[in-house]
Length: 404
Image 1: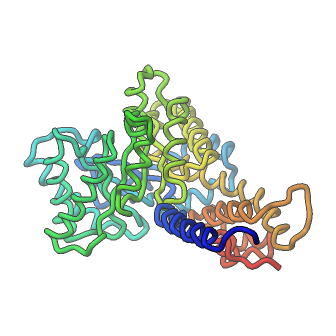
Image 2: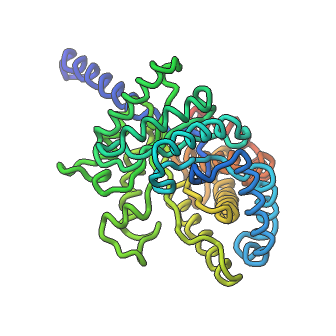
Image 3: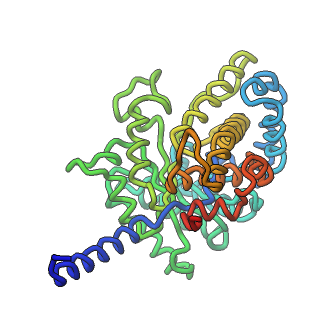
């Protein structure tokens, strides 16, 4: 080695600092993401909401059994029926924003306390739950804070899996305010430090590109003091703000793809989940209209999954049917593609595709997502890749499996 030792020592010190900062900013992906978020007006919510949505979804599944079987097959549809009967909803937001409107302070105060009581008594199968407050803007912040505080009062603290959604994000400084709000509420209510977490709703082009050309959403994530758990895309507000005509606003418009790609890149390896938006087309009307809506939502969910958006809004009970059907179909297809490659990787055999550790990590991750959501069981995996136990898959995902 011809380079001076002091130079090499300085490089080592600098690289350690860089590595430490990268590890702080990008701690890695966080498992356990729900497949969807059910949005319901807080004025209409009841403790029976998961059961009611499950029953309504089951009725639609029975009426549309033919088209649904064509989309996913009998075996997958049977699995969906079981899910709708046992755990139809994984994540709920009781909405105090656009889906609620302005009803007067006395009414919203009462609804907020009731919402807290509902959230505290939901079944454990709803493992993520919360509210969407009004925006942290000059015009609405007092109402937003008052609602959040009363929800916590009604719940008697922070319910398990609680998170609140902050809409109308246009500046990274709003993430600073959300952090300070969490700290103030924790202090005022005697809550544990770090108990409150929030999501940022991306429904404005300013949330994607700041005046100086930087990505607002990336700055917001890293100014959230580890409290930001997710980014939710707002389909129609965002499209309208970009000047897209109403008939062309959708999850698959190019402006939506651009926004979500920026969100995805900003959130990558931070532990922050990205959630796709909603469709305004509900499966209601004539049999033909319902069948068309079912096919459309199945296609949109599949499209999102193919692009790496593993969660999305559901605005109607009927959306649960195609949410679960598309999700199970996607992950079962992913298992068929991934299992032989994982098996070859574990056996160190050759083949048409030679995978590297990073690819094995991605293959294991998609299989674990399929297991987590219930698309298949561990036996289905080992039937195709005998050595790919759940423990081995976790080691592959963490890149901790020793090479032999």
